[in-house]
Image (cartoon, rainbow, N blue to C red; front, side, top):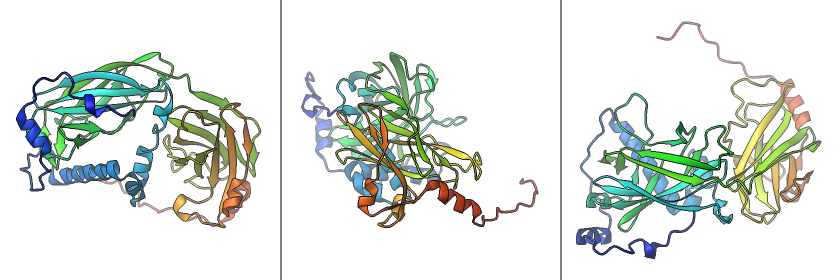
Length: 390
């Protein structure tokens, strides 16, 4: 997101309560806070939310470290990737400035952008209640149907968003700023000229305690900017049975569809980079690509896998997609790649390349590998008793 000019935040304000100034300048207290538990929320849930907040705080300060953590590292790699280069595109990010609040804080949508794939927006909380300033991080939770506790939810043009991030607010002196909040557009809205976004924020937490229960609803309109989006079909570009059928690129994401002989429920592992060597990350598996555990494919079938990566910055001419046999943790010099494709973003052309050979990898035909896997003994599936579970 665009950087907010911190020196202009208080322009036009003629009086600031000295209590806020005093509290904002204090070091954060480490003593235990008095706990006010949500109804229907137990100690386990509160502890989980606290751990989540701590992890997001670590990610905000040390993203590389957060991405290296076991189990949760992949989550932060996705969070830090999709959309991170979109602000480099001229005219994509829009200033919003819509505010709403309660007795404890005022929330403002500072800026947003929508490129036809996602909506991204950032929030700032201006504090009215000084007890909020005792916290380093504030967070909310998703609304749960059937529960009394209000939560976080987002709708686009009146339709519930199919996926979205939860905001985590980090203290910046006397106010808080959120991470960039990513929202998936509902199906069929990628061609709208303008959209209306409504975000509903319920309970606000800090250090495992509920600090605010008065809901705040924010509604803002914004233009959709799709002028940088590209979508291309590709014919007859394959190596060893691995085919790239189409690709798409927007400021927020790069995607390709691969076709190959099915061999495993995990699919293939793809990585992308720009012609300048900028790392666009591993496939995020955003749309379930590479997760074939639902039994949709059997040996002998042609699997289709959509791979998604962070969108390249404006001005990128080509991107390189390398498809590996192993996940990142298992890759080493001498291990195999199934193939590589270089996509020309200016002409739309795709060609087969092999720069992975210079990095010490070998090439293996995915068709031959699938044949060997089909012939190998398969693990037995667990047998159930057939007795209904009560």
